[in-house]
Image (cartoon, rainbow, N blue to C red):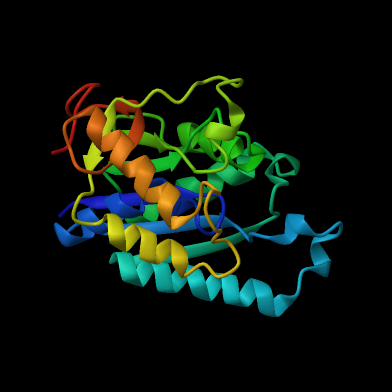
Length: 235
């Protein structure tokens, strides 16, 4: 049985980055665990304690509904401060991810990209690499980073590492599930031409798919892959 761990900083990152892939893997029988480490939305307030508890509860409920729609086996949520991960010791973030790895024993991990505009994504990227070091006893065979609309592209390739995908996953049959899952996020969805709009998500998937002869795809940067090396395309 394949075990897959999806690591996200915020509620909706998991859908934006790999919602179609989650749905595909779940359909193929994989045990997919989604871990969202941040509370979400509190950075919209000068004091995070000003965020209404009912809004945070609704956001968490939306996360569960999205995970259920995509077919994830489990959703784990944590409460790191939104857009303030850089105020948390890196060791604490890495320890959370280490615990998730010990618990779920994944052979594949999908995580945030390290060159994103959002500081929380950068912290998650570094913490994942720390927690998923390719040690002899580790179950982890591959680690990939994903792009997040309205963060990865808005860095305008100004921060290293640049997002240079080598892995393209065919989501022709699950693209609409991804779009529907994003629409469940009532506080996070946006209207076109915002990058998180349904039209923009479809366009991005078609763009990535056309690069490798597919109708729709999600793109990933391969951090390491002990199974097949770099440059593999899922078809």
